[in-house]
Image (cartoon, rainbow, N blue to C red):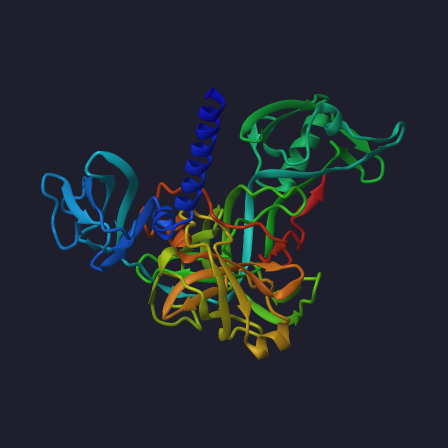
Length: 468
């Protein structure tokens, strides 16, 4: 009898597990799971949201007074009685944030949704090639260099003292350093006075203090501590957009990193200048192509850079409307981007911004936190494929437009297929620029793939590094 009872319990457990699995894959359950925990709406633009899709009543409680109406009604003591068999009609009234808690029969909690109502932002799409000149905060250590002494041969004073590649030298002998030349002067001053060189370093967000004894280089004729350092970067990239009222701009779509250390550059100051594309080296499978551009630092300055962020460089234009710029267009929220035809704006010759046809093949619709790979694009324009092979370095930041809206910017190319690449949602960029309120967000929904950044070309070239 007991064995029979145990068998019935096991059978019941199996049936219950099967029912749970079936429920988990049912359309109503999937619609509830797919509904984002954070929903962004635009003032005055109604939105329909499908939840369970079952003929059940539920209670929504929240703090949406003055921010949101549901099914055309204001909250009654913070409560709505809704039919889950029909879509919820959300009417955003004013900018703000509210929380909605869905419960069956007003008792069983089902879903919590944070609703953020934002304005519709309009910006001028870019596409222009720009020269980017950065000066770092401090001087970055990019390698150890031998000091060839007359008596001991090659030595490495800084490495022996504990200086690491990736460190940023902030102060030498108590003075804030701003250039390679300045640090060389301070090192030799300490050496002539017969004392070690005090260094203040930034390492992984903390401050490190060390002393290094400089050694005389018989080869170069002055004292050195055995480091390769870099105080800036320069290259050619693409402007994504600017705000016609505040003149705030963003470009590239991803952070600029040091080529030697692969760490983000800590910005001291920077500027953007007009650039011209003189040649394009087409991309091919396994070998990304590259735009080759020219610019003259100090001439045709069009803006100052104020930040090197995860979603591109941000700054402010110092000139009027840019050549090749068009009218302001709306910025699409991430959830408004769809698969299908689109276009990118970029330069392949000289200064002329041109439109090229692409297809958005995948959208990370649940990506509610900024990430650089929310959109997957495929180049379909025959001329662009013929001239560049697809997406090339220097094209990063090229704006992606769909249905008359700015939806994103090109950021990466697939290594094994240069006609395909990733883009970042424009929404994340305008938030980073301060043109939209910040979002609390959840985990980044982007997918890893074999791709590489197509940011500024020629970065770190042009005499910004030296040995000391």
